Length: 95
Image 1 (cartoon, rainbow, N blue to C red):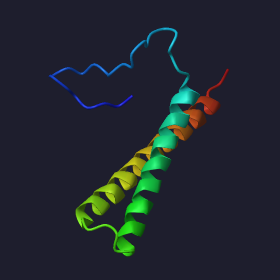
Image 2: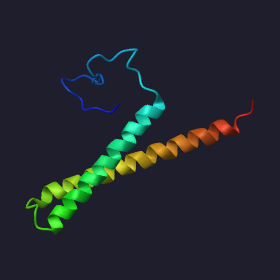
Image 3: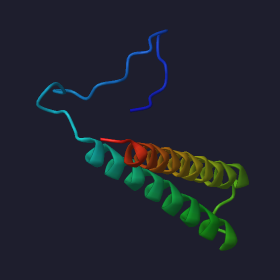
Image 4: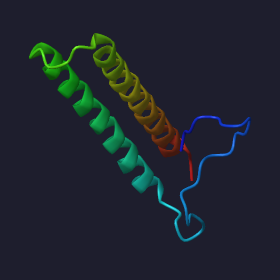
């Protein structure tokens, strides 16, 4: 989980009650990350629609929402590409 650095620590933030029992699989983490990317894309779309309809007055917030969604999508694409590269590398190994 990527989190912001607070108080000079590099420890990831943990949810209350997290521990060995709350450990998620890679697939679950990946699904949650894809869901967050989808939500950011939806929020950016809503902000653009609101601006086009004259409901939003702050173009800076719309721009920030669009950039956030774009950056999240770029990161997701890079993670996907790295996972594909890792799979291809493993498939080339001799057993």
